[in-house]
Image 1 (spheres, one colour):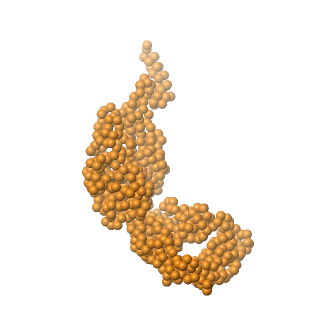
Image 2 (spheres, helix red, strand yellow):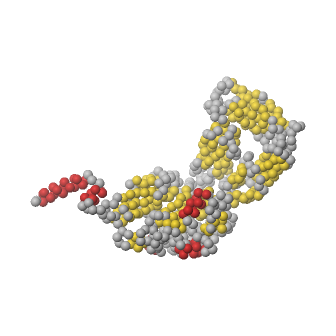
Length: 591
């Protein structure tokens, strides 16, 4: 046969192969034989970053090139980052692990997803807040309906940790939904304030909750006049009277709400579109005002103590000493005697700045900053009758920190107040590779104590804690390899994956500072707290100290070469799988 004939055959073969997939071409070149992959590497560092909404393309290099094994991509935390054919998409702030598998070999990397506008995790500028307001300043919702409040900060790019509080959760509840916004929900008919607090500054929105359809169309004012009938009301303590709004025209569709200038004398409650009920609650005089569109009308109210009224004799609080952690709340109960007293209303007050300790008109206490204060409840009918409670607000465990902290967890597990190698809660302490008990100048696969042995046929086995066939089948740290047990003794050990899961699900996690150190304050069901400093991760050098924290669990993750850990950054916390040769913090526990 001629060379021209063989060239023609080659050309025909190339044309046929051009219409095939790479796997089909490999099968053709391999004469149908299966060629297993022996290694796989990714063209990204072990830790990569992208912002929410961004994508990152990862290429997997598989050896040998003619392998018949297909590359499969998996995200261990698909809610944080998704992956398809090597294209990773950031979905929400957090840390995800991306795996590429080909046959029996696997490679992985961590993806740190940050906010789309945070410039790499700073959460805003370092500018101080000069002013705060809430938009809208006055709003109305119906029972069961939601609304949105927005905090307006000056300057706009100032760094602000805004706290939202409802003055009366029986009327309106509030839930923070983003850095600057909160969702309010109507619970019952009434008017109250929802406050936005940052530092020592405060602003509020006055929220009125109505029955569905009770407020009119909510359009702009189209009325010519407004008045209240009757324009003067005289009441005894506990007595009620319904007053009416008279409008021209009477069927105008306008926004209507009522308020009392002295709610401790008379309170007002909207009962229909044009009617409200006034109740005498304290001796004195006040004005009830109705807002109808752009117009207002007033009713003068006088409340007197009738001859047959029953005077108040005492008021008693359910607590006289109370300790709370920052962000914790407590609902006081005040008992007024006698039971048939004519006016059993009470007034609440705090000796502390409301930006530190806020007490609502219903006796709900919210701890905002560490402080000590006296909460006083007084009888409205006789302010000389009162009771007090001494309140202490802590930022977590008291300095220098409790060594053994009972958080009130369902399991009864106790957590240590600081890391291995630290002497107080905000100290970073030491870094350890998983199953190692001493520190090093760097933490790499090359100096890992239990590093894998490469058998040259694609099989790698760790010399200890290896669950694959041929390994020792150990997946939980033994005491002699536990940094907490070896360095501390006295029953301390590294927590398991399950115990970290309990800490995540049973406690409140709050990103904060302790003595200038960033970290997570973890508050248990009983109000006690521990502080986990954002100590970063140690590899060839120490990385991300102050930005995020990573703490070892005592269990392998099930992913080759990785162990369980808890990761956190300012906006998220998650259980992660981390390469066991990395240097992480250890926070001990004991039974």
